[in-house]
Picture 1 (spheres, rainbow, N blue to C red):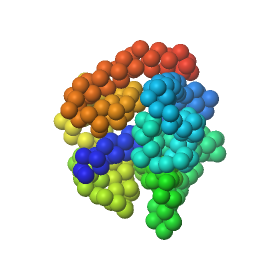
Picture 2 (spheres, one colour):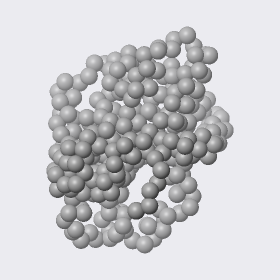
Picture 3 (spheres, rainbow, N blue to C red):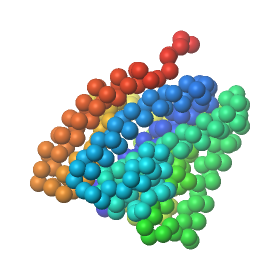
Picture 4 (tube, rainbow, N blue to C red):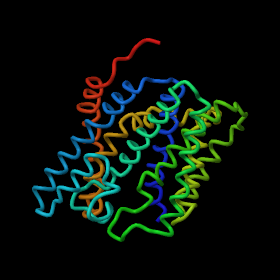
Length: 302
């Protein structure tokens, strides 16, 4: 229903934000690839592999039906392409939400390769390549409609060649806006945001679910700088900013409670929510942040 679709749109919002940020880092700031990879590893890997280890142990203690291949494919960010059953249907191990990390990591790798091709100096070539990459996602939606994956395979819209559209179109929009410097009315970000969420929240399939929402959301996040002052203040709210800062750890660990508590024991929904918030917060401050400081590349003064 509507709320289920809104959950997917939350992930799509992260995708378009990532596209904007990665485009700036690689094609405008021209961060060296060694630094880029090191910082992405420091950001993603520690919490990701800790979660995989913990959830594997918890699952092994409660079932003998644990498939090592699920763990292996998840660990190398290929779970949306390999595995016995669909992520959504195969809930022996709570890993369904990490499909988004597959898309993120594949897209980061693609964008970094494109930045290497243009030698991180030619922004015009970067705009063209990133735009072409975004457009190449669109034929895959038609391909999978004509030739759907096997019934026991992952859903096509979880695969990077489709789901990566949001990241790539946002990265492309960022570069084209820098080039064209066109004037944007202040109502555009709010209108685009509303369109993205309304269309995506009510659509059940097709272009209205997989193409239009990321396109509108890409416009919204790339034009927030011209949004009305009240909207900018809203997104600068300390509570929202805290959720943004802690979002990765919260997103990773909530799946245990969503899958094991909220769906199977709805009567303790509030307790499950509080537990997810607590472990996510603990993960951010006591594990994610220390590991990032340890692993990330040294910051050099500009």
